[in-house]
Amino acid sequence: MSTDDNNSHLSRLADTTEAIQLDLAADLVTHALEVLTDEHPDTEDLRDLSAVLVGALRDALRVATSRGQRLPAPPPSAQKGDDNPRLPAAAFG
Image 1 (cartoon, rainbow, N blue to C red):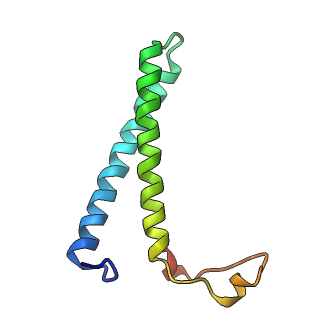
Image 2 (cartoon, rainbow, N blue to C red; image 1 turned 180 degrees about the vertical axis):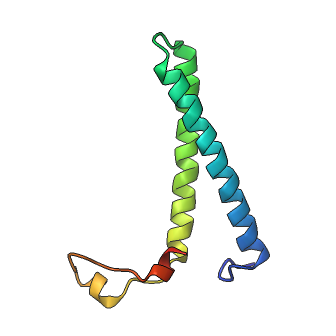
């Protein structure tokens, strides 16, 4: 299976998984703000929150790496040390 085709089963599955992860991340941000705005947060709550945040960051890095591997190679001007490299809009999906 390949994700080269945006309409392939694997590509749609990846998109669905990423959407779920984004929804969970939004919920996690809300929860983190609740814990962090507490004047006296419980140490265990902070430890649990930290563990969940690390997991969410790991997921975000995995998605970013996966998406980055699917981007087309940058144009030659970007590879020559151009101070303002530009990618075509299509590179960002």
